Amino acid sequence: MGPGTRRRGSAGNRRRHRRLRDPRHPRLQSLDDLRQHRRAQQGGDRLLHATRNGGARRRRGRRGGRVVAIEGYGVEPVPRELRVVGWRDLFAINFTFFLNPVMYVLGALAVAQGGLPLPWAVLAMVTGQALAFTVLLPVAEVGVDHGLPGQVSLRATLGFWGARLLSSPYRVVAATYWFAAQALTSAYGFQAIVQTMTGNRLPLVPVALGLAAVHAVLALLGFDVMRYVLRVLLPLSLALTGVLLSLYLSAGDPRFSLHRVLRSPDQHLTWVGFATYVTVMCGASLTLVTNVADICRYTRSRRDMRIGLFGSAVTSAIVTTFIGGYAAAATGESNPFVAVAGLTHADAVLAVVLVAVVVQSLAANVTNVYTAGLSLVNSVPLLGRFRASALVAAVSIALSGFPDFVTHAQHWIVHLGNVAAPLTGVILADYLLVRRRHVDVQALYEPRGRYRYIRGVNIAAVFATGIAVGAYYALPHAAVKVVWGIAIGGAAYVVLAAVQRVVGSRARATSKTRVRWAE
Image (cartoon, rainbow, N blue to C red):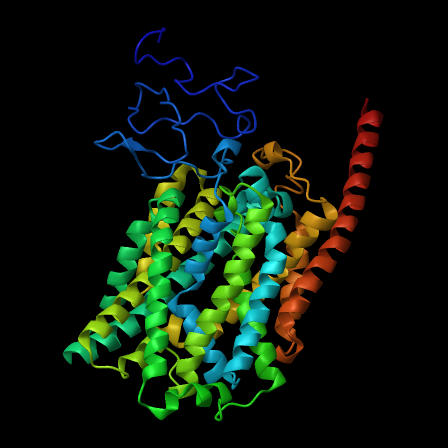
């Protein structure tokens, strides 16, 4: 216990705060009590080892270099000195996340089911993506400014318990769906390519489960590992996308002629089709509203965040819609990997496409499990980030055995978006109009602090979201209902929040009067 080599004090050998000389960070003291380290024994040593620099647990390599290992930060803020990620890394993470098989399928559906000519399909999807990230950028600011996970920051909008019991489970559901959809879409492509190469048709579900297991293992390692893995995968994904495009352009099949595909003679522009896929794309991206701050909490500035997120999102929408829509315009097939399998019989080329299937779905699913793990640990802090991510990964792998998630993808995505758009409107109105971008970080960790509202739930936010969800379901697709969902959610919240403040102030005044009479 005393001073000396390898001794620890009563609060462990954790670094003390520079001004307060206290072993705990002052913003976390109210909620995040000192935890036992992993080697603590019941009834024995309960002292903490020092938190390592960088948030991730690192070890020394044989030559003294730093080896990236498992991330240690969960719901607590990332310190200012660790927020050093620039826009290039953020661009790589987000672009690689969106450059995935499910986004190809959405682009193909805009052509095959929406009936849009390829150029109009690209415009619809880019419009939806640009709209989504225009409203997501302000929501992501709390990650840059305070190093907060998105779910923790939502305690200011939904209440301390509202965020833990409402928005966090919603994000876990959304992320596990996206994970399963990615694994299944990849499995369809994998199955078609292997059948072309060998003549054997692999069973779909075991392939999907195998791919899901590989994705899940890498996702457990955390942000630092995710950043480096995706940095490597980005150029590889771009190269593999180039291979897909070259196969299209060099195909002997006249249906794949660039001139014919751009004309899309089998498709015809309609406003309903255009508005529907603006809504589908925007709603799909808005499911990130509860966790968009997660991937920004290591970012050094708002400028880096805006360039990295918006630029990557719009660019990826152009690429994925063009690749997926090209296959649909030529063949009617909604999975470009399946369409490509019929364009060549060269095993070397098919092997490259097979790698593309695995790599591009891996990039998306690493991010899905990472963000879902942070959402779950917000609901159940005792799990810790690693165990929460492991639990999410296990559920996601199990869901990958249900092909309906892909065969009815549009149906599932619309339902997720029906909640995401109204919730986004509420969050945006609260952050920009009610709180004027102010966040009391310490109060986010206090169960009885200013964000307690009514028994830990912001009733105004919950009712406003419910009103907007009802309106969203009632509106037709031709109304671009994602815009109405955001607008109605925001407007309803501003009105209900004002009413809630008036009622609350009167209730407090009445309570004080009763106390005086009692005295």
